[in-house]
Amino acid sequence: MGAAAGEVRLRNLEERGALTVIDAVTVLWMPHAPRPRVGQLRSRTGQGARRGAVLGGLVGALVLVPVAGAAAGAGVGALAGRLRHTGIDTAFLEEIKARLAPGTSALLVLSQDADLEAIKPFLERGRSRGDVTLMHALLSEDAPDTLREVLGSMPVSEE
Image (tube, rainbow, N blue to C red; front, side):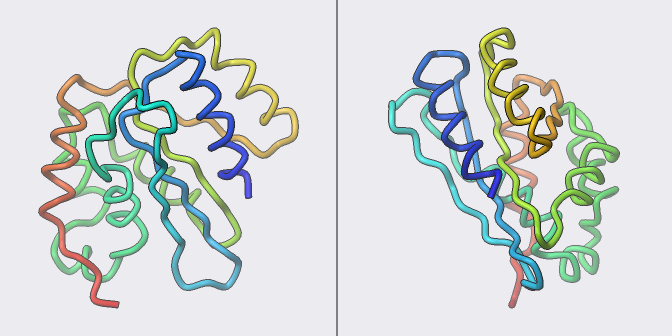
């Protein structure tokens, strides 16, 4: 349930102008469930107008379409190859995939203009309880468009 708490923190940071959220999703994977639930966050402030479900597509490519994706050559390595100019590499994708497992939750955020000094105290509170792991990648400016293009061309799960 850490993603829900993270969503509250993220909205507070966004309202304070500490970052602009381009896209954000929560991932909740209940124990023994065959797949996670992915939810798109909505901005209450109107800041950082969302450009689409880029991160939802990324979660889908990593954990929701493993069989169809592998058959279509869209494994993590192939996906990383298609995203190589964005700042996302194989190791980063593999770590996300490994952390998205039954009994976990995640808050994935694509942002810009982040004020790390304002964000750091929010992250540290979660880390002290052991419920937060920060993973980040510095992305190229055209990364959201590239992600949307690559993920939009991937097969959709038939389940």
